Amino acid sequence: EPEVTQTPSHQVTQMGQEVILRCVPISNHLYFYWYRQILGQKVEFLVSFYNNEISEKSEIFDDQFSVERPDGSNFTLKIRSTKLEDSAMYFCASSLLVSGNTIYFGEGSWLTVV
Amino acid sequence: TQLLEQSPQFLSIQEGENLTVYCNSSSVFSSLQWYRQEPGEGPVLLVTVVTGGEVKKLKRLTFQFGDARKDSSLHITAAQPGDTGLYLCAGDRGTSYGKLTFGQGTILTVHP
Image 1 (cartoon, rainbow over the protein chains, first blue to last red):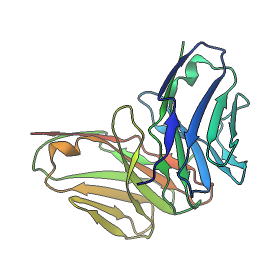
Image 2 (image 1 turned 90 degrees about the vertical axis):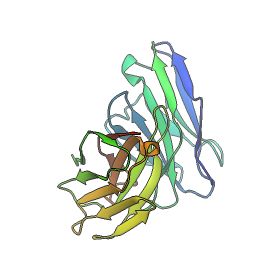
Image 3 (image 1 turned 120 degrees about the horizontal axis):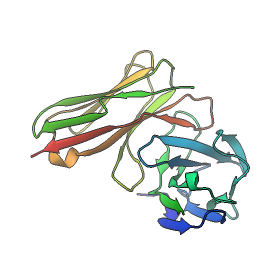
Image 4 (image 1 turned 60 degrees about the vertical axis):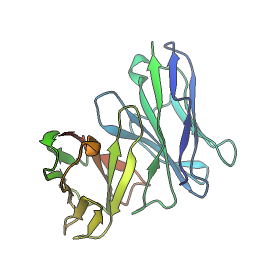
């Protein structure tokens, strides 16, 4: 069964450093997402991406965050200058359609900012 | 802010018992998805319900979408220890480019 894959599974970084989280969405999917889950809290929407541009972003997704689809398969989330409160599990997800459609999640990248 | 309230937050039962998890909102959703999440892993989709009043069955799991598409339930019959985990509901308003609103989850423990 096709799946969303993410790398790295776990990254520890110093506060202020840049981090890039990588994702390979399911191959025929057209919509891509990043969500995050701070330990013990709800899964939260960060951003959706379609046709090489951001479709929607949450208030969490400030100027420190950016997304990119550099080639036909990868989808990346960059955090320019990490803060302690960025420590969370980051989930990439993808779907074929945008509404009423199933969204499939990757296994997550656990980011620890120290 | 759209909220999805899940209840109960914790559920501890004996093997063989039945249980129901509820997901309620004041907002209408175009679809609602149920996921199961293991510690340190991503949510794994169980089912998507789209039509008001829809009932879907997945072996011992029965999912229902409310007629008004504001609420949903997950019923597990004859629970087994393998059902232990975190169950999440997530709603899609259909107007926000795939933005899912998640409930806070129900932690289910089934004791042998």
